Image (cartoon, rainbow, N blue to C red; front, side):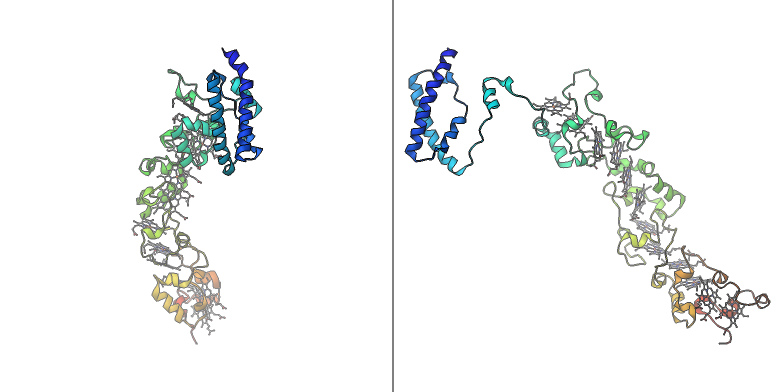
Length: 336
Ligand code: HEC
Ligand code: HEC
Ligand code: HEC
Ligand code: HEC
Ligand code: HEC
Ligand code: HEC
Ligand code: HEC
Ligand code: HEC
Ligand code: HEC
Ligand code: HEC
Ligand code: HEC
Ligand code: HEC
């Protein structure tokens, strides 16, 4: 039965072919239409009588005409390769390619979607991580079936944090699935030891705050000072303008450079500033931080800059330079 069906294939194809050419000529379509012949021939079993054959041939003509109209607007379908043609007869003629990431994704749709939408740097091919898969059997340890984080990352945060999935809850979206701040809070200062130490060793009002009251909303967030200090004594532009004087984890360790203008100090030391500005003496041309350098509250000695301007005999009769010269912000020059 099969054999005879096969033998019928050649004459049938010839009839179809002849009808097709005739159809093309009739409809005035160019000979490019023969491309449809590249489609695999219909299964012979389906055509076992001449009536059916004729009917089929007619259908071929009709559908070919329609096909030609479509083809006039659409790109022609690419022809099957000879290997694919052969595979219709013998599937084992194909050389199979390994499953691609989209192919895995068709079955593992939710995994694929997680990686696509939130995978971050884990947007890698599935088989980059899953060198082996579909090896699970009941009784087998799950850890042997899936890749271990530390094969690629080692002990990312040290030996105390080897249970990766307790924080990175989804292997396929390791940052997006991070547990909430309240759960991380007990460990902030363990992973960020320098900051934790700085807060403890320099007691300030900031030491009494929790890390995540400042670093709120999500891990890694940096707050603006102005979120809490609504009316700072210096106009707020950005944090760097404040942390130059107040390192945020030790804000009372106030250090500053030589660039700070007198009006910044004047915000709190108005009377000193006014005196200095009104002074006609040479100190009036100096900046506050030229003398009060580096640390807030640092007070220099006159001799640091002037050495010994007068004889020991003269100086021994007075307690201090200021006895004759008055205070440094409003110098007096005796005799002038
Ligand atoms: C960066 C490495 C990595 C990539 C890329 C990756 N996986 Fe995974 N996958 C893992 C790890 C690690 C586990 C184990 C998680 C666990 O133990 O819960 C896992 C678990 C799984 C599981 C079983 C648990 C579950 O979530 O259903 C499936 C299925 C899976 N992966 C499929 C995929 C597919 C499909 C892709 C590609 C679309 C992919 N994986 C890409 C690392 C990866
Ligand atoms: C035809 C559907 C199908 C395709 C394609 C497929 N899987 Fe699976 N996979 C399954 C089924 C079903 C399971 C078992 C049930 C489950 O865990 O979802 C499974 C389980 C898994 C598991 C967990 C258990 C184990 O034994 O490994 C991983 C990992 C996995 N697949 C990875 C992949 C990767 C990677 C690809 C692509 C290279 C892939 N799968 C392609 C259907 C598929
Ligand atoms: C097969 C190797 C492999 C495995 C297994 C693996 N990763 Fe990764 N992971 C990578 C690569 C590659 C990157 C990209 C960055 C890099 O090169 O370090 C990455 C990046 C990350 C990042 C940063 C992601 C980002 O978007 O910034 C985290 C977090 C991470 N991995 C956690 C994990 C965790 C947790 C596991 C286990 C559940 C795991 N990884 C398993 C290869 C791997
Ligand atoms: C106590 C919670 C916790 C545990 C446990 C944990 N992580 Fe992390 N991990 C974090 C946090 C928080 C980040 C910072 C994420 C970010 O950038 O927002 C991070 C970042 C990472 C990164 C990003 C690269 C980097 O250092 O900047 C990798 C990779 C990573 N973790 C891998 C791992 C692996 C592998 C394990 C297990 C061996 C693990 N993590 C266990 C909390 C944890
Ligand atoms: C398991 C370790 C781990 C824990 C726990 C952890 N972090 Fe992190 N954190 C990291 C890693 C890794 C990074 C990324 C480092 C990088 O990008 O240089 C990071 C980055 C940060 C940054 C951003 C640093 C920058 O330079 O932008 C801040 C802020 C931060 N963490 C605060 C916190 C706070 C607050 C907590 C507690 C709620 C916390 N972290 C808990 C590991 C951790
Ligand atoms: C009063 C608010 C506040 C508190 C409390 C606070 N931080 Fe910060 N933190 C900041 C600000 C603001 C920055 C940015 C500083 C800058 O721009 O130089 C920062 C920066 C960081 C950084 C980035 C690296 C660095 O030092 O600049 C890490 C990590 C960090 N903080 C961790 C912590 C940890 C851990 C705690 C708790 C032990 C904590 N912080 C408490 C406000 C705070
Ligand atoms: C989440 C809120 C918050 C943020 C953000 C914050 N602070 Fe504070 N800060 C406080 C609180 C609360 C106090 C104690 C009450 C007060 O002085 O307002 C304080 C006190 C201070 C003090 C006085 C410290 C003492 O012990 O007397 C300084 C200086 C200071 N903050 C500077 C800064 C600077 C600079 C920034 C930004 C880099 C900043 N703060 C960000 C909440 C915050
Ligand atoms: C030139 C250095 C300098 C700069 C810049 C600076 N501060 Fe200050 N800040 C000080 C000094 C000095 C004090 C007084 C400390 C004391 O009371 O001993 C102070 C005190 C504070 C206090 C304590 C409460 C108060 O008002 O007395 C807060 C809060 C504060 N600063 C916030 C800020 C913020 C926010 C910024 C940025 C917008 C900022 N500071 C910029 C030097 C500076
Ligand atoms: C936010 C207000 C504030 C600002 C801004 C400020 N100071 Fe002060 N300053 C104070 C307060 C309050 C004191 C007294 C308490 C103390 O000793 O900390 C003080 C004390 C001093 C003292 C005297 C220390 C002593 O031992 O008598 C000097 C010097 C000083 N400030 C210089 C400066 C200079 C220079 C600047 C500008 C770079 C400046 N201050 C900015 C608030 C401020
Ligand atoms: C030429 C150097 C010099 C300059 C410029 C200077 N100071 Fe002073 N300042 C001193 C010396 C020296 C003392 C200590 C005086 C004493 O021992 O009686 C002092 C004392 C102070 C004190 C504490 C005593 C007091 O008078 O309240 C404050 C506050 C102060 N200076 C703020 C300022 C500010 C603000 C500016 C800028 C507007 C400034 N100084 C500019 C040298 C200087
Ligand atoms: C940080 C350095 C510094 C300190 C501290 C300092 N001075 Fe001066 N002083 C100067 C400078 C600079 C001049 C100007 C010199 C010049 O232009 O020749 C000056 C000028 C003077 C003059 C001459 C004023 C004039 O108009 O001719 C007197 C007097 C004087 N200082 C006294 C003092 C006394 C008193 C103290 C201590 C209370 C003091 N200085 C602290 C730097 C300093
Ligand atoms: C007995 C009062 C007296 C004492 C104490 C005194 N001075 Fe003078 N100082 C003077 C007189 C007077 C002048 C000269 C004024 C003039 O040239 O018109 C002078 C001048 C100066 C000048 C300016 C010199 C110049 O050539 O421009 C400096 C600087 C100075 N003194 C610093 C000091 C210092 C620093 C001390 C403390 C170590 C000090 N004086 C102590 C009375 C004193």
